[in-house]
Image (cartoon, rainbow, N blue to C red; front, side, top):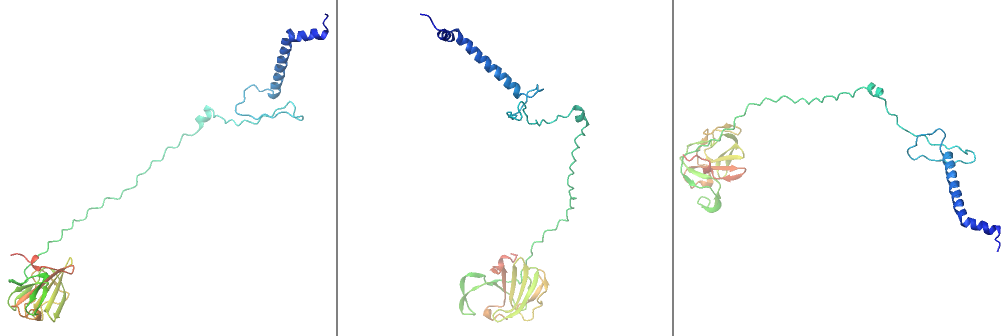
Length: 250
């Protein structure tokens, strides 16, 4: 049976003609790509462009022209420019703050002299200090405490200041008779009762240990049944203390 031209052409395409057609297609794609690259690459550009440049496809008015954005490449100073640059300024030397001259030590103050005490009068204790329990008072006829000591001595015996201080009060008490109060500082106060009228000191006088402040009398009505004596009290910050704790033992 005689074959037609179309049948022979079909056999050729399915045979060797298939590879020819495939080759022509690849060649066409390669040529098209080459011309496309030539179209997108600006004329006279031989160095590769770094970064991410934006490519603008040509339209009808700008066919064949591609505008690339300007590249902002920092300039590198030449060796000559670097040499001409002035050296870094020398850091300023920090000046240390002036320290004040050491103050000359002041003369060391002498410590205060210890307090000196003495017996106001020499005599036996006929009425002891007692603020914790009640004791019977023969003169008053009741039970009461005793905030001082009674020192047995003769009427007219000179009474001495127990310690240095200042006379703060001279008074006449209805119960304790003539009284003199001396402030010794540091919260300490001494009181001398049952004195003779008109003692030898006045309010504001400064006294030292052993100065005569008066004489023993018989003016304390609250202790009139006792033998002649000096009634002595000591208070520290307003609290009665036993005077015998301050009187020297000898």
